Amino acid sequence: MLESLRRRRQNRQVVDRLWDEVVARARRPKRFLEGGLPDTVFGRFESLSIEVFLLLRRCGADASLSALSQDLVDRFMTDLDHSMRELGVGYLAVPKRMRKLAGRFYARVALYEPAVSGRDVAALAKALRETAFVDAPGGDADRAEALAAQILAADLDYRHMKSEAILAGSLNGEQQESSP
Image 1: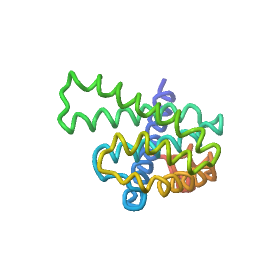
Image 2: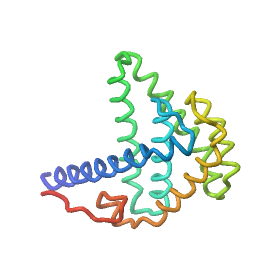
Image 3: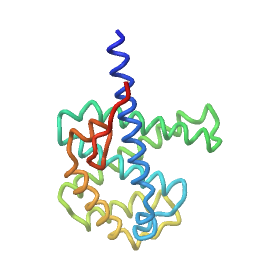
């Protein structure tokens, strides 16, 4: 029983470290300045969704990362829930909004996946114009190709990450020490 608790705690620490790195990557100014996403709540949701999607693609490429991918989705949804509450969304409205945001995320995954798999900048830019730039008003849809190119470059970056490093809680290739 104690071993199980220790493993869960270590796994939570790994997920938290990965989540911190995902959020940092999603907040890179280049995605907003050159990629055209607005620096708003909705623009940040779009950027975070893109980053989670890319990490989940990487996890899907290696069976040893499959359990971790579900933990990351859970962490993403928990973070969205907390963010809505911090923004003042009423307690009773949060579940309805969570369903809507989760639906948006999975719709994006369905649209982005074929374009990213095919390394098709034009198809990905079209999908971004239909989703990210519609749902995040104030963005610059003329920069959709630049954002698509950024996403494809980030996908390559994720593909080169070592599974062992990801399992240790790092997207930078550095394995981190776990605390006892």
